[in-house]
Length: 190
Image 1 (spheres, helix red, strand yellow):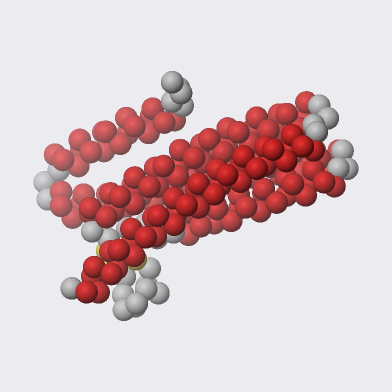
Image 2 (cartoon, helix red, strand yellow):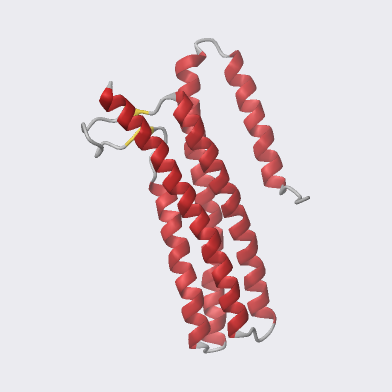
């Protein structure tokens, strides 16, 4: 059984506390939905922070493989990973949180209903857990690169694994947009 990180445990306790407080608040309907929108934003910002930390680790790796070792092939592999990591980070950072953006058909800012918002939050939490894993793996990879002369095949294998995890993040993000566009389709047909 995989151990939960301390941050995951704290995150679960905070989520439970938030739900308890929201259920006791008078007029919780509107406040509850706004709190869910804020929760969604907080989850994504935390994911962005994790990817920022991972990107800093990758930049450190780039310094090691390029400046210290002058290994062009390793630099290219690590730099490609950094670019994909940065792209995923930007998608998460710039995603709407609880509202459809104003560029959607109709031009107005549409609030996402609570049921769909909960689905989006669940997806964002899955993305957050993948980002935690990416940060941890990136740190281990950086340690490996700094300890010894690492083989190009080993770096390539690790990069393939990272790209797979980033693809999982992208797939979840695509799923998130599908949930949001279901909201848009339902409101247009009404």
